[in-house]
Amino acid sequence: TTDNRGVVLAVRKVETAIWCRRNGLREDFQQVLPEVKEQLAEIAEHDQWWVRRYVAEIMRRHPELRVAEVIEKLSNDDNESVSKAAKSVKG
Image 1 (cartoon, rainbow, N blue to C red):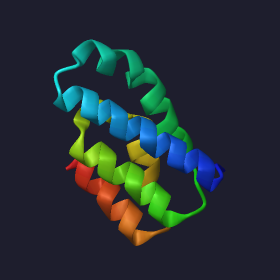
Image 2: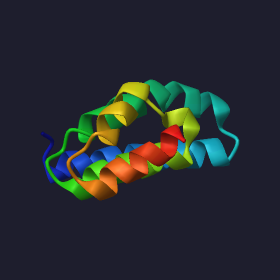
Image 3: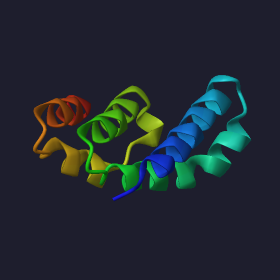
């Protein structure tokens, strides 16, 4: 699992990527995209449910950040809030 500092850094990278996309910095967004997806996959393993829920919500709201394996895993999460959010991504 990732410590909370790792979570904060991952969230920061995700938010920066989203900002780049929203502000038309397509090249910058594409450059950070692989790392951001990797960060999301990593924190999706966190032992705190709210961190996993964050990943599910980000992937729900931003299709370009989705990782199918992560969504699938979170769909079967023990926490109902997490699994429900992940299942809503799948439709």
